[in-house]
Amino acid sequence: MKMPLAVPSVPGAVPVLGHTRMLSRKPMDFLSSLTSGPDLVKIRLGPHPVVIICNPDLTQQMLSDSRTFDKGGPLVDLVAPLVGEGLATCPLSKHKPARQLFQPIFNRGMAAAHANRFPSAVAKVTAGWRDGLVLDMPVEARRLTIQVAVDTLFADVFSEQEVDQIADDLTSWQVGAAQRMSRPPVFDLLPTPTNRRFDVGLKRVRQTVTEAITRHRRSGREKVGVLGALLSPEGERIPWFNTPTLVDHAMTFLIAPTATVSTVLCWIWHELAQRSELQARLQTEVDTVLGGEAPTFEHLPELELTKRIVTEALRLYPSIHFAPLRTVTTDTRLGEYDLPAGTVVAYSPYIIHRRHDLYENPELFDPDRWLGAKLPMPSRHAFIPFGHGTRQCIAGEYAFNEAVLTVAAIASHWRLESVAGTPLPTRGSVNLTPRGLRLQVSRRISFDETTDAGQPHGTEGGRQRPTQSKAWLI
Ligand code: HEM
Image: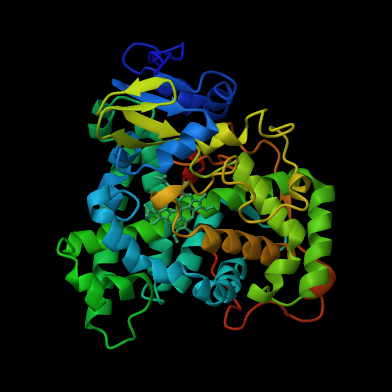
């Protein structure tokens, strides 16, 4: 056996903050700089050393061994007050029964039922759009994805006002979380407006979910979706399932879709707004395939360009771009490096997806690189937006279909154009966002001129709300 190598440290750490500032100020430049270096590198997030895996094979090896690399690390600590020991953050010892409980919601057999509900949920939000409206895209995308999650996974247990409040509270949380990732914890205690909104948002959103669970438990309604699973006899039998744990799991299924699909949608529209030729090709595809109707599960095979656009956005802008989510449980070796128990390990779909040895012109947004590829999962080795192994995303197919059908539904009725001066430079946060992206929407005349075909029933009128101030911070 070869002598182990010492994991090299990335230069540029500063006292107290380590590499935190680089990762939060210029996350894309920082991660891109690691794509062609050593297989493993060490950085410091404040006082905490973190080993980043930059090699695709070692990433697979780590993700395939959830016993040696269990959940834990700075990102888990950051989201713990919001989602506690929900499915995405619980240790391996509590994972299996919970995963089995939720898995049926995302099984193949459910794909059509979910897919056919996405467009009407999207239409509830877009019905509030009008010609010339300038959208705060990250906020709007968050509303879209919360509405979709509520309509498909929560059996309409939240009122319209609650959906809006949840969207605002999760925005406040994400703004606060972005700040918390870039400074020493002592600043979290200061009574700044962002800290206050973070604390209030966190408390209120968990309260809203707690009340929804209580309401649903007492109601005579059929128990389906996430709350249905939690309140089922199988759920009741899991010994550690008390009320806070139920809230942790329900919160996970609100924040996970919102924080991820919404950022992918933002990046897609950012790219499309800059590439009128690509947006025109997309419109031609959706006009031909949908003919002005709302998209359904049956349309998915024919929406080929739309699927390539979503795949390319997942490659270039993976929502979980940098994930310090694992802690080594027993001394182990990864590649040529020894990792003692307690080491915090991060993996990065962003680094893997931008490696020159895996992709030609990796920095280029080129949906046609996927022509002829098997989508949504073209390669296990080089394409890992949904992770891998037992802790891989439970909702990969759901998320992919949601993004495809949302893009198709919007493109068939709306053109989106850039607003000068946006987005602002991307900052490091839980997810990568085109910060402050503003897009102007104009109604396409092809199908809207004579009828409202394609706009599902019950969505006329829409909801127009002022956006929360300073939401552009993320
Ligand atoms: C573009 C959209 C999405 C992306 C890129 C994404 C990405 C990921 C990744 C990379 C992981 C694995 C994290 C790890 O290795 O620790 C994960 C886990 C997870 N995701 Fe997603 N996700 C997306 C959408 C969703 C949606 C829509 C839901 C729920 C409806 C969801 C729920 C979850 C859950 C519950 C886990 C934890 C799974 C487990 O540990 O068993 N995700 N996701």
